[in-house]
Amino acid sequence: MTTPILSSYTLGDTVEDFVLPDVEGNPVRFSDVTGKWTLVYFTTTWCPYCTAEAPYLESELVAGFADHDLKLVIIDVKEPAAVARMLPDRFEWKSPFLVDADGVICERFAPIKEGLAPEVAIINAHLVLDENRVIRFAEYLNMERFDVHAVAVKAAIEALLAEAADG
Amino acid sequence: MDDLVTLAVTPVGEVTDDHVRIVLEVDVPAGVHIEPHRPTEPFLIPTVVTVNGLDDVEIIYPDPVAKHLGWNDVALMVLEGPLEFVVTGQRRPDGEVVSGGISYQPCLGGACLPPRTVTWSTQPNPAKVGL
Image (cartoon, rainbow over all chains, first blue to last red; front, top):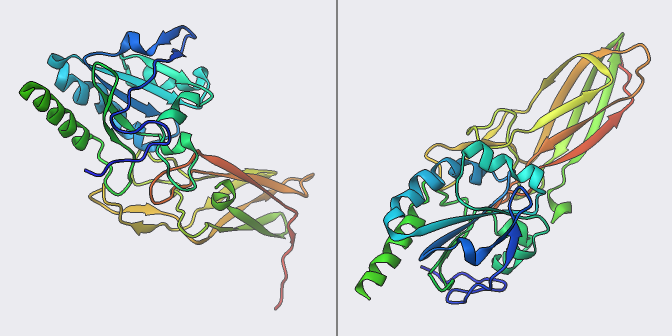
C-alpha cells in the first residue's frame, strides 16, 4: 500500500474534532458519532461513483463489521442541505450524515491531486479512524480500480481489526 | 481546471422553408470524456441537449466510443474529442433565434467533476440550394 499524501492530515494523524450540521440543520459533533472504529466517507449527489457504491455502503460494507463497533459517518461536500438530503432519503442511510456545505472540513482531509479542487479530490474517499480518531487507512477515488463493493476498504478494515486483536 | 473541461460549442444552423437543422460542433478537451446520452451504467450522468425556439425537436447524439477503465468488466461508452450533435425542428413564426444548452459531466482519468451546462445560440441562415 502506498502512503497517500494528505493536504492537511496524513496517515497517523489525529483528526481534530469538529461540528457540522445534519440535513435538518442540527449541529453534530464528530466525536459524538464515532466508534471504536469509524469509517468516514465523503460524497456528493453528483458523484456517479458514490451513487454506484451507495446501496452497499451501509448494508454490506459497514454491516459486515457490526460486531466490531465500526461506525459510519458520511460527509456530503459543498452542497446545501436541501440538495444533499437526497442521498440519505434515496439510500435509506441510518448513519450520521453531515453536511459540509462550504467545504471547510473536507479540505482538511483532501489529498493533493494536481489540478483538482479539494472538494473534488476528496469525493468517494474512505478513511478509517481508530477510537482515538487516528487515521489508520485512507483510500481515494481511482477510476481505474473503482469497486462498488469497496473490497480494498473491507480488506483494510479486516487487517486493522486483526492487528488490533493481535495486540 | 474549469476552463480545461468546459466544452466549446459552435452552432451552425440552416433553415429550409420552416425546417431548421443545427449542427452543434463540440470539442471535448484532450484527456476529458463525457457520458453519452444513454450511459453504460445507470449511475452515470447523461449528456443532454436542450433546445428553445423550435417545435417538433429531434436530437441526434454522437456515437460514443469504447473506453476501458480498470474497474468495469465491460468497456464504458463515452464521448471524446470533436463531436457533432444534430438538432432539427420546425421554426416558430416568431422564432429567428434558436438557443439551448448542453448539460454534461466532465470526467478525467482520476475523477469526475461537478456537472455543468454550456449554452448556445444561433440564428439559422437559409440553406444554400442548387450547388
